[in-house]
Image (tube, each protein chain N blue to C red):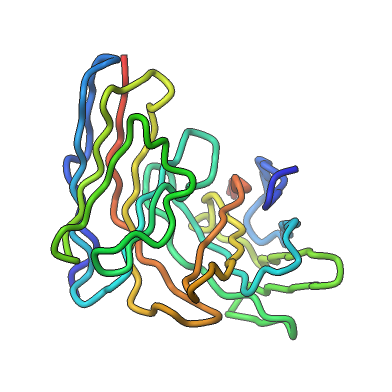
Length: 113
Length: 117
């Protein structure tokens, strides 16, 4: 079983649509969680952190369910510029106090006019 | 603030040849990471440095891959000899925070796209 699993998509949605991505992780000792965005042929960039209480940043809402080991990202009012791959990322604490990020394979989103 | 720099941006080699990639992290960032991203997959951590010491290299194929960060700043990743399955983007990242529980924002460089023929 992969440590971080995502639906690869692609999700093809019209502008203005609401779209949700899901992610599950296998290690219950995971410390913290993130969504990264990766544009085609570009490097990943941090989109937002994910907290147990849920958090919102403009049109983006992230949720974490530790009991189910499940993370979600909701995008409202999709824009053409939201087209990208969204990477679910889980942070493990290594011995010695260092952090290690485990990336999912990503979910592709294509927003069309 | 300058970002993470990597070179070269593209490299094409034949199998069994050697190749080296260079990374210059963001100034002041103690932690440096090398990732391999195969097409259609997420980045996979190869090696993590804290200053010039290795923190984690559990997924580095040590029979052919090596990396160093001699002065705790720049780093090089080498593949010798290369195989077809090494074709991927090699991403370098750095972070300021270390030895901390919780968040550890990593900033990625543009990557080196390697094609092995």
